[in-house]
Length: 97
Image (cartoon, rainbow, N blue to C red; front, side):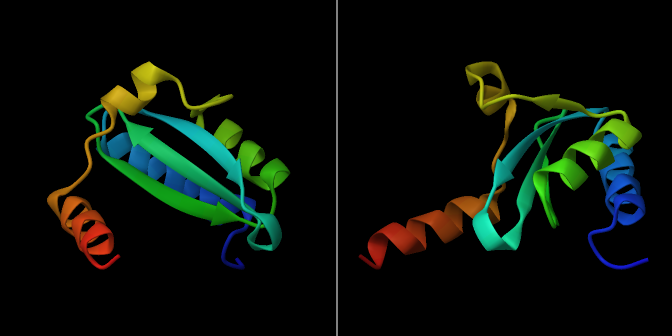
């Protein structure tokens, strides 16, 4: 299957959800790139996937059994736990300015 296909995305989303006690998703339109699926696991870990459009992203989440949130709610943001690598990456960006 081509990268970003429904089958591939569904498989990747199911794998993430299974490894993190379930998951919720937020789909963001990112212009020509397509759509970004941000997955937030029940344990606070998060990941993202890319699809060619928002319709494909929603379809993959539906097939994977992952609920799609309409927007970033406070509870979902508070559930996310950024990794130490991400914190280091963000601090380097702000210090470089």
